[in-house]
Image 1 (cartoon, rainbow, N blue to C red):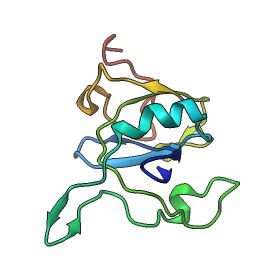
Image 2 (tube, rainbow, N blue to C red; image 1 turned 135 degrees about the horizontal axis):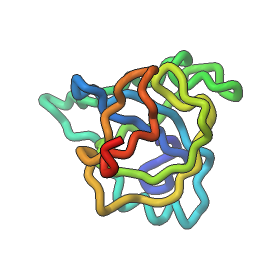
Image 3 (cartoon, rainbow, N blue to C red; image 1 turned 180 degrees about the vertical axis):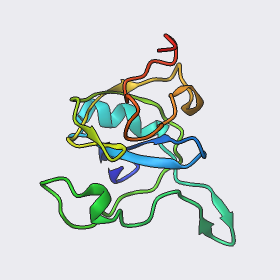
Length: 136
């Protein structure tokens, strides 16, 4: 996410792939103040693995090739958090290279789901809207 744990301004979203790697899938539009207040208590910094080393799956800053949407061609500094919150989002259908081409709209946290309930990111040829519950 960008900004701070106490006041997140945008979310950086990801999904796990078949190998268990958390893959960056895109960034949200700026959050409304009510969304920021709702999310802040759910976010926590990444756990320390050993001797002060943080094990986060993404580099700091995000490379421009990851976050390089039209409005941000440079590397993106962000706040690393534990990837434990599932978010409901609204997206358009432009999905390529395992990420959403345009920014997403954050809708709400899905407290009824764990990160293990989210379908795996299968690849560019896979349909990103696959519904695990429907099995299709």
